[in-house]
Image (cartoon, rainbow, N blue to C red; front, side, top):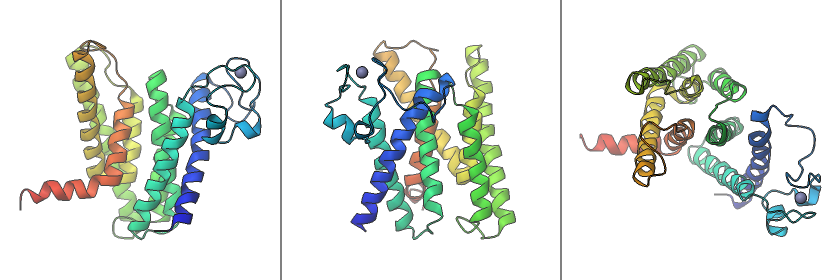
Amino acid sequence: MDIFLIAIAFLFGLSVGSFANVIVYRLPEGKSIVLPRSYCPDCRTPIAARDNIPLLGFLLLKGKCRYCRAAISPRYPLVELLMGLVFVAVYLLLSARGERLILFPFYWFFCFSLVVLSLIDFRHYILPDVLTYPLLGAGFLLAVLYPGRLGSGEIGPELLRSLIGAVVGGGSLWMIGLLGKAAFRKEAMGLGDVKLMAAVGAWQGWGMALFAVFLGALAAALVGISLILLKKARWGARLPFGPYLALGSLLTLFFGSPLIAWYLGFYR
Ligand SMILES: [Zn+2]
């Protein structure tokens, strides 16, 4: 374990987290994610570079705008911290598996996309195509660029594996959507969820995609039932499913193989 590389991964994750905040804030409103520079939502003063340092800027300003003293949402540093930790986790996972360097940016992108999609879905109930399609594309690209990742090492079978993963992953959500429509007599699932799980299937294969859907549904059911019991939501209320699917996908990425081995251990 190399402390220096872990620190680099963490700092890189922090900056990517800062970029994630910009995307989450601007993309659903159709604003440019490049220009203008970030500004205080209260007094509209552009944020100086020294105050825009991920995590540190928030801490040094004690969570307040330098100019108007309006409180800055702790969501921003929390997203940065989360992305930093996730990037370290990816680094540790891939180096423990002795994976090639080419895979690191790919899996950072995978986790980045899932976190950003979750945050947008929480706030706006959408999973934008401009995020799900590149994720899907990257899954196929990975199969071409690095076919030795999980299977035979040949491009043909690996692409087929991604394709089956995409069809099964997306198809499972399509089926859940049909069942939900029959049960609640209204549209229960957006196409965004279908596209998200198609993308995860292209990355992780059909088995892990189904496992991710299972874990996501379990988490969503636990949260939904808790909210109903706490009277914060009622039966049939609209809850975004994307964040739970993303959570399930991250859990299967990091713990999928050990979890399945543990589960199958009961049947030996
Ligand atoms: Zn301000």
